[in-house]
Length: 353
Image (cartoon, rainbow, N blue to C red; front, side, top):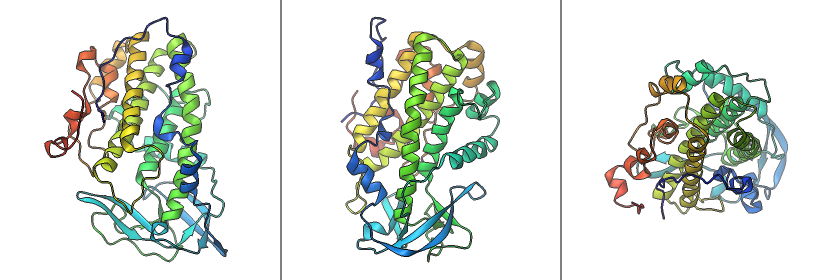
């Protein structure tokens, strides 16, 4: 198994456009597999008739969404345990048997509200703050490629964080009292409800990334519609989404656990490999079509500072490890995953040279 970032080769100008189209897809969000979709939605459950109104959120002072919560007849611990990362492996807590009888929930407004929330809480000196300062983002414009890419970034961020209950309705649960839990002193959404709402986030990503990638592909190959600044910034944000997802998946590889079932039809290793391949292709296409404008590069180089050590319980530990590659002058400067891994982890991982 290889999770190394391969050396890039220049694409030939004779390549047909369809050759690009076959690969332009963010792999982890390919949710066409029926079995995977059914597992996330818990369609087989037997629901009780009564309902409660539950309010959920991701951030303490962030936007909320309200759903009808139905109780179901539980038959397995897998339906009630919510998990989180620890240094020595997964830990969990028991939740109640509540979920969504109607699984499909339109989270578009919720995602857009969080996009505005995250952007308003972004430090001006961060690389994302510099991106937004450099190019005004019209969030209400359907034609804005960067804005739609930031929607993907937001949905991915929500997907990694997890849902929690807020307000008076606790669905029969009390706050988690384990200090290392991300839900410490908070009430996580019940396990089934977590999965069902996450399936809607994944569906949003799957639907919208196809349009983003199609528009980005045309912008790179035809140099039309969008400015080259927007193309470069969009690529950087996409790479940031890919890097966050890749390092999250590494934890699954190092800490397999029988009771916490991996639900995706493809292994974490395979998804990481696809992320690396797609990242390479994005950088290759940008290099093939042109360079990052110097005025933009000079601003971003001051703020895009990659971290170089992977920490299993910190999804932010190696931020910008891939997205900074757009600013590199030479392919020889490209890094591999190996340099991010602590020696205690790297000794147990087979990586290509």
